[in-house]
Image (tube, rainbow over all chains, first blue to last red; front, side, top):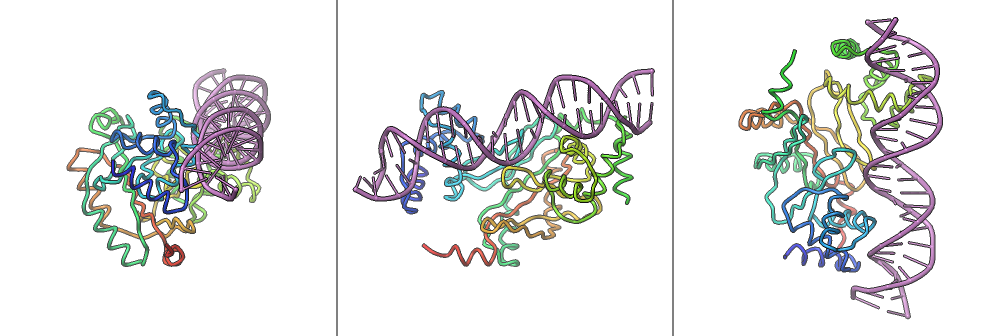
Length: 146
Length: 146
DNA sequence: TTTGTTGCAAAAAATTTGCATTTGG
DNA sequence: CCAAATGCAAATTTTTTGCAACAAA
């Protein structure tokens, strides 16, 4: 559970308070590899009888992003979706506009490009989002009309 | 004004109706290179005394995306921002998390990677979004405290 | 003890929808 | 003519905020 420790250190380092609610949130997020949105996370916690208000989740997310433990992955159905990143290899997402399926794939070259651009423009790049949009093989077939 | 024609053909091709409102919207979007969100577009039109309801803008955006004339570029301040793409070279965005500044930069390799992944996984990739997040030189300097 | 945090409920912001009316083709 | 689109206002959905009670350090 080193992400829990990491989050606690981050919170304490900022002079903030590490509360039971914050621990429930970080623990739940790292309990599966699934992407999540605020509502899903709220429900996952609730199903396990962990009562954390949505307001607290909304207030905790910016801290999780700042700490580098999660990141926004895509915007869909009117809201953002996140995934945890600590301890995971960077990867990219393909999103099917037909069925909504998300496929993750590794891409080391992206990291290389990130570093290069970073240097060339003098940005302190902390993360990237590389998303491919289109149609998966199944949906591509069904879209093949005139 | 070939994007106007393109949009008209797209709309008619779907058996839909090319209305004055739709023409105002597409014309306004292509009148500058600026990114936009729904509210900004609505205000830009209003300032020119072009009355188009926000509902119509919301209803037109999916058509513009489907036609390949605009795309979502980033989510910020609780809502999506778009840019027109027809006739423009693909490019990527760096977004400063300090000041919110957006810097566009070309990257041909991204297109190459897109095509390669496309082939490798059998996706029909129609577009990509490559965003770098971090701090611009100015903000990077200011963040440099313990 | 001192502040930051919580939950709640209200408010704000963003988007969608129902419907009467208008209009493109 | 008639199915589709519009504007408006109401409804929905998502996110933020004010505040009293609570609790971490």
